[in-house]
Image (cartoon, rainbow, N blue to C red; front, top):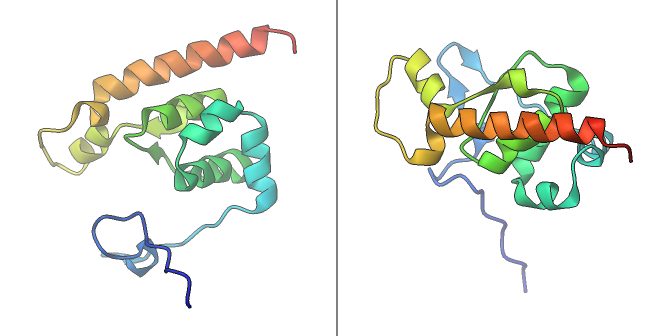
Length: 135
């Protein structure tokens, strides 16, 4: 008996690897185990478990490779993790991305600029406190 296929978490019914951008193909980046380890080592276990695997991989790429991308998510624990990695200036809300694209739309509360700002500020405060506390 064949094991069931793992379904993509993408609710649109396509794999992110199939997407093509209007200006060319999208470059797919994969974090190595070492990069994932470097990111998770700087986060507490509870935070790592609260973050989606794809978001953790994106955080590892930002941290380890210094790629010039911004991090956009509606997952508020992932926003706080971004700050715990010292990358708070690399985050952007979903609302801001839509605004930059000229799209105005009513959004769920966790996708707004306000929710992003609140969790970014909370994450920065936690990051500063952790840096001051001897381990």
